[in-house]
Image 1 (cartoon, rainbow, N blue to C red):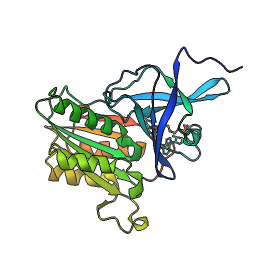
Image 2 (cartoon, protein in one colour):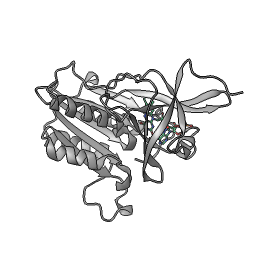
Image 3 (tube, rainbow, N blue to C red):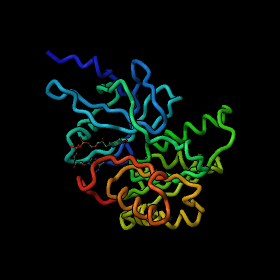
Image 4 (cartoon, rainbow, N blue to C red):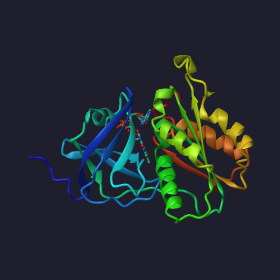
Length: 260
Ligand SMILES: Cc1cc2nc3c(=O)[nH]c(=O)nc-3n(C[C@H](O)[C@H](O)[C@H](O)COP(=O)(O)OP(=O)(O)OC[C@H]3O[C@@H](n4cnc5c(N)ncnc54)[C@H](O)[C@@H]3O)c2cc1C
């Protein structure tokens, strides 16, 4: 008989799925009871595995104002859970924790007017939630003074951005938002006209160009552990205090090191 996980988990159906590349996709899910969360937080979910739930943390892409939860997921070929999640289609369910967690939120404490949000691939997820939430708060008059948001995303090939159309459209509409994309394997993407190289290579360039000074800016690093270590070093050498650098590491440094 199947074990009852209902004390800790809700059973949440997938309502929609969109694939971007052979390893990257988004899913939308409709929880049976609302999940309270702040933009930038994550929630753990997974599948039943020998009477336990095999679960991992996933940053929430959707804004707390949306009715459904949205996630941007990468299939790690040798991973325990992500290949199983990849098989799930609309109508299938996951076991989801009833509580969201995390402190990777917009820094409202320092008073910094500028936010430099740096990510690799699915590390863009919390920034989408933050941007959507800001847009809604501005529209509905809960925020008078928009701050400046500079989002930098690095991927291998241009089919891996996932949310580029949304971010480009918003950046065209809102002056407070800048979106910079870079790809690290331009030889596989001959049509690509944008920035090339890894995100770390662009941090100094855009910090200087856009005057993202340590005195006025909070930096955010999300995704690949190797990128986070390098980017932190670059920012620290550029004068950023550790307190002005927020980090969300998707897996422990030194483990599963991949090109980004
Ligand atoms: C706070 C937080 C938020 C996260 N948000 C997301 C998210 O929004 N989307 C998302 O896809 N993942 C996210 N992750 C990563 C996710 O929790 C899992 O680690 C990932 O899905 C792999 O799980 P797995 O069971 O398939 O692999 P595992 O069996 O756990 O790991 C296999 C190996 O792959 C490494 N690894 C883990 N993730 C990756 C990766 N992306 N690329 C390369 N190697 C990796 C591991 O360190 C390990 O060496 C987040 C992690 C944390 C801690």
